[in-house]
Amino acid sequence: MPYTTCYVDHGKGVHKTGSGIVTGLEIFSDAVQDPLDEDRARKLRYGLVDFTGVTEMKVTPEDVRRIVEMNRKMAVLTPGALVALVAPAPLPYAIARLWHTLSDDLDWKSNVFHARPDAIAWLRDELLQQYGSPAALEQFPSLEVKASAPA
Image (cartoon, rainbow, N blue to C red):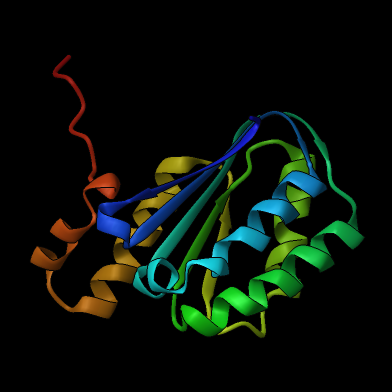
């Protein structure tokens, strides 16, 4: 599947990844599923949506509006959640920015990035502000900053 969802960090995070050709229907269908498991949804603190591997995006502005309407149902269960979107290519970036604009009235804090490390750094900073303690970031091992190998 070119658009996949993986729950991480003991259910406190969700990583959604697009690869190859991604359609608006795939993203919408995934958004429909999100609020169905209310207990799982209520645990979520952040979402990371990564379109780095997308080669073609078949998503219309109307698709984005429909996705945002489904996100409204999820936002009721996840107030204050963080959403970081990664979209290095021009079309996915434009679609992500449209989503960001249309979802502005949801009770989520979101941002769009060209690179995954920037999105992860933003999520870590925001979670640190929410929790107030660097030790609290241990709850989110999928967002750990990997040390680079010595040169």
